[in-house]
Image (spheres, one colour):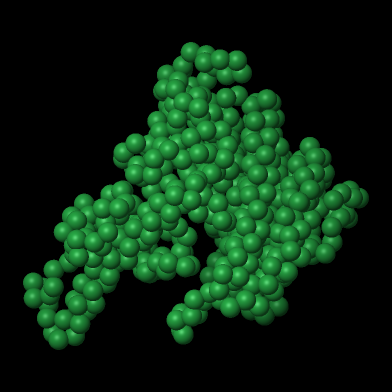
Length: 490
């Protein structure tokens, strides 16, 4: 299961629903339930056909939009303007679906073999991509620039299709699901967690997405779920979490979570499988060569190994974040620049294997589900360089030094454990640093990034209005300059 959360709205407190439920307000969240499928060969052919139909509709609509944009660009070079240009093709979902229904007898004579939802799924994905590109280009969308959508390849693009209408349900035995035009498909695992909520009326299935991932088909149900806000095991407890490479997480309580290094553990097998793939005859678009059966088999083995590594990583991170969110009422983590960290070619592979961004993402919604709070420390807060006992700050602390030794009080502690303690002390000193709450002391009130001050003496700027009478104006002659006030950097 891969849950996801969107902004919620509170309801009145609900009556207890059973053993283990706590009295708390109920909220409506969007949550996804993912299950593995065991399809028959006929079902596999049907799923592949629907995924291909979705890709066909996506590419057809994209070609229509590109042709119209290219035509307008060419007409502008001829000096045409305004109404003289070719009219815009609206890329809303209703308009593109209407255009597809008019053109499908010629474009896809076999369109009746698949559900209409397959074609709508491809067009819907294109509309989302075009909207993201437009918003990114205009500055409305924050983050990295979004490129214009590209055509989907049959071999390189993952196969997936989304159903929003029709027969979408979980059967009574909870081991089969029914999908439009595909019929009843067996599940590899029981869907009782979702079925119980659907039967109780606390969940409503909105859509179902079938995807091929690592050689296995999965179905993901996007649901609207009524969830009760629980209470953490220790509501008043504060814990600082410092994530790293040597240890996945170090808590301010002294607990250390080892880094399983799933990718490093599978590196030997991946190297062997990659050599096997390179020795086979693979596909080549330049010459039109198709891959041999041995190449497809070897490539499938490698893909399944990568999928297993991803599943193991996802499972471990879910267990870690669930245990933290259910135990502590307040969790403090650093606001890491993961995108910048992976630019370090020496650490990029190890950082990506840890999943720092996933830890923060999961803690964000799981603390909300459990009635806790997630606090982000400032990105430039020197958690590793600050002594958790006396508060002295080091000017530099290279990564190769794994033990923090304070010159002021003599504290000797693992640098990750020291950082975790400092994160927990942020809340105890000045309160929570989240929206609507006061920020910890030492944070820049204007929200700007601030680096650690250098060691030694630092000149203190004189405040306005403190200059004695008769000393205003320009600097005195050489030799008569007023002494500056110096202060030690902390």
